[in-house]
Image (cartoon, rainbow, N blue to C red; front, side):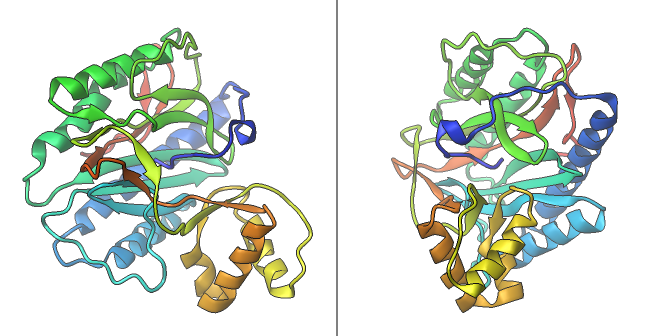
Length: 315
């Protein structure tokens, strides 16, 4: 579940049908992503280091022969997404936390995207179940001809029937080669959108439920970034860091990866220069505007008469 808040003109709008050869890679990527999600879930125990969990999940993906589609993320409580530990993060898991684990892997650019919510105490079971059941109900609809607005209706109705609110300004999305966010948008509320799913579309659906106001806003410092442009840079160290960023093929990256290679200070200076130049775009954590708790579940789909859930392993 990587949420994209880039301007609409930076998003790909073109749907390219999946070929059989691409389908194999897409399904493999989803399978590895699902395995990584379940592995990460097993690591979420009281007192565990968030930084170590994320490192282990990413290592798992690479050992399975896939690439990391976006940095693994763990977001707590009223933060819906985009919380990604830096190299100095000492945060640990508390049994009372509502914990969102978001994982992505790719095989030659074909992407799997998945997320789940863990609450060790069970105190917020109803909230966690709301997003999970919304995803289960929506999963039946990823067939050719389904209007995306109707998927939003099912998600909204399922969550509100349980006494919670869907997060209206977050949505699912299409997936393309080395692109986390393409058309179509998969809303979490009903929209009068006549956009229809087409056979062989690859999409991620990610319902968010909250006991807050039902919306998020950016809050805090970004540790996740995306390369959005190419321009000359002055300093040699910024050019060196940019070269590494370009090796990610346009996929999101995190400060932690760069700091391991270039050091904390050099990385911060380089990212600051690249951000000022409009070469990278930061994605700060996304906080619920009413300070409500947020749960999330996500799967990746191949649109068919019988939808294929590529990330469904074991929940």
